[in-house]
Every structure is written in C-alpha cells, then in structure tokens.
Amino acid sequence: MTLTKRDLVVRISEDTGLVQTQVFEAVQKTLDYIAEALAKGDKVELRNFGVFDVVTRKPRVGRNPKRPDVDVTIPARASVKFKAGKEMKESVLKLSPKKGKKAA
Image (cartoon, rainbow, N blue to C red; front, side):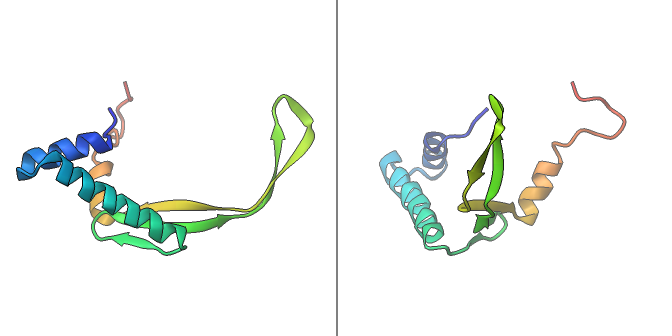
C-alpha cells in the first residue's frame, strides 16, 4: 500500500477537524519549504523522523546492456539522501522477519 499526499490530508483533516483545503495548503507549504531548502543545498532535519541531505554523486562510467562494448560517461550530479531517525528506524525494524523463519 502507498500513502499519498491526499491520504495524509484526509487523515489529518479527520483527526483535527480542520477543513481539507486548509490541511492541503499546510502540507503543501511544508513540502515546498523542504524542497526549497534542499535546492539551496541545506540539510533538513526533522527530529524523530529523519534527515534529508544533498549529496554529490561522483562521475562514473556506465554501460548500456544492449551495447556493452560502448562505455557511457555518467556525469557528477546532486542527489537527495534520507537518513531515518531513531524512532522511525525502530518502528521499521519491527517489520523484519524473525530469525529462523522463512519469509512468505
């Protein structure tokens, strides 16, 4: 299952009693400010959730599987990295399969 922005808006609206349009504006503004900070190269730290950071990937040589004899140069580029916070890591770890049991 995927949680969408629309799902977030509906859930927050139901929990708080706020109108969905107000919630949508607040959620959208939050995402806009996060994207704006990252576009400037800033780190975004949300306590108990995680940290978004901009990293630069090194240039490298790749290969096209259809033409393995031709090398393709992939230039350096900026990318967003996310590191989960402690509470989120602990919550997600609970999903890990138990040792000794096979995953279905």
